[in-house]
Length: 446
Ligand SMILES: Cc1cc2nc3c(=O)[nH]c(=O)nc-3n(C[C@H](O)[C@H](O)[C@H](O)COP(=O)(O)O)c2cc1C
Image (cartoon, rainbow, N blue to C red; front, top):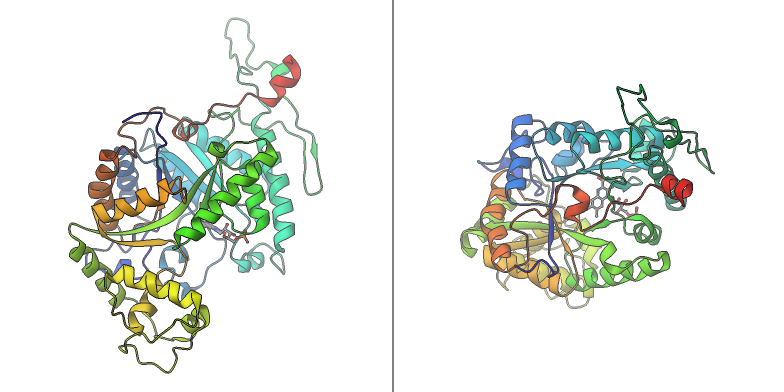
């Protein structure tokens, strides 16, 4: 494998009971995966053995019992930085990404959480900056309303600048801890930040020395224009979600195209769509697993939301009717093609389309097939610049992950697309990023 060749980046997007809403109902499905520390530790260790780039935890600041039908894994789970601190002690190489919702946080606190995790993991921490997709969070933080997109992103931008500044308030050699001279800290190398902006006023310094990585890799995961601009200005990696390659190629081009405005180059930002691999030892085994999972979905089979989405009214059909002609709608044609590909046959029913819609509601790329078939799609998206890698969302746990690691990863390695060894030890190194110089050092030393 040539190390100059562009390489895939792979990470786990943890859904404790699997991405598929019925993953937990399979006979072999883990039902309490979000809470079992031994299980989570084993998952992280397996990923590291497979040389994955990262273990990623999403987060929401609100929940309700009705999320159990479509989003059981997001309805109830542990606080990300607490869990990642535990995983840091059980691993050596893998990047650890925690989600931070800036809308309901203070920069000084977040600078402390992230810097602490970076020290505990010896340079493997990263943060996924979101501004909050769940509007109900406002009610948990003494507010009446979730802010609009513009305000959330203005706030996020100043938030990132402040946290990043706080990480630099200690120069790398600010703590000589010299027993002979009695100099524990060199005061000339500990700086105040004195940030005064529209939203924050933060004096600094942080009460934690500079993170091992200097600056932690930053991830963003939005789709709006403001989110793309935030990604272009600050992110090292952007998470997205789509089933359609052309949509992914357009997003990839657009977001990378914006980098130049900020003096950055294409390779400075990695684009990672979500991938839901339903892998079998044979294609038939994978299709059978997809069907088994779908039959376990708890649903009232309301065809309304699907009809609204595709622009064709299916409400009068019975579930086992063959899918009628949907050519009047471009979207419906696209969805029907995706459902045919997932089922591996042309003659799909209304039920097949309903299931496909229901289980891919978050929009990530669902691929059903043998290891070769899944690797083919990964390679195609990678080579056609729809993706620099994938945020892997196993449909059920742990079997859905195990099959991907056992069968697909070696296939990608055989094709020279994915590393067989880690080249570095920090998350920045896995992403090919150098360690940035401290901004205060630049000012003081020129
Ligand atoms: C892979 C992925 C992971 C995401 N994880 C979270 C999350 O953990 N918490 C959250 O509030 N939003 C999450 N989001 C939502 C985005 O941050 C964003 O709010 C959403 O895509 C809407 O885009 P916008 O904020 O640009 O309008 C995620 C999105 C993607 C694609």
